Image 1 (cartoon, rainbow, N blue to C red):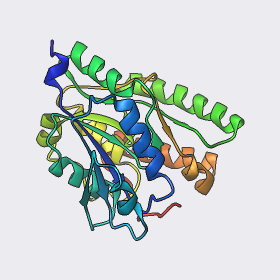
Image 2: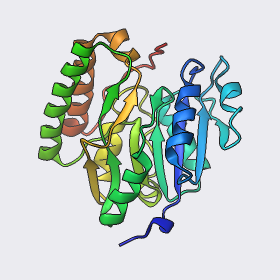
Image 3: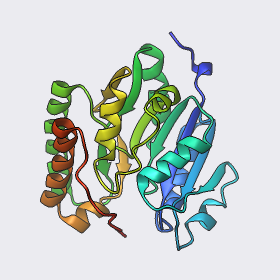
Image 4: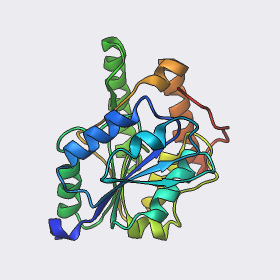
Length: 242
């Protein structure tokens, strides 16, 4: 069994034009990591706003640039630039809850075969009835996870460096959607991929607002089953969502 001191956690945050959200993201990450994160890296993914400037206010945050736009490329850059043996990925519009880092340490300490940990998103800025439907969605998703034994959410993703190295990193050919299931599927070849319902990350619901709840659920389901059945992601051009 590994000990807490064996974990060097790199927290990696891809960010493209996130000046509205990056402050809250970093404030929560710094406060709730309780000094148990080895490094925090913000990957400025060709932003044209003040994302990098705002992130630069935090002395404990390192900013790296990835000018080839796309979240998989930003995550890949974070992977390359980081030096931790546990890589934790969140999105720039998330708010890390208390205990999130401690849960990572606990899960990896008690299971040496665990290579990847993820859990659901809940949304801090959507209506109550939508939140209720989201809980139903995740209940169904967890049933599917128990059938196929892998699942992940890209903005609530923790993976061992050695596993990502064996996978040769993220699939940077994926433009939009499907990258999380792709990562979980490929990681499952090297050990346990755990989707823990209580490992929660809070995120903005702006994508739900942009697409609509039903369309968003359909999109995610389509990409999920494409990866599971066809072992490839549906081609999709990058979509900018404010």
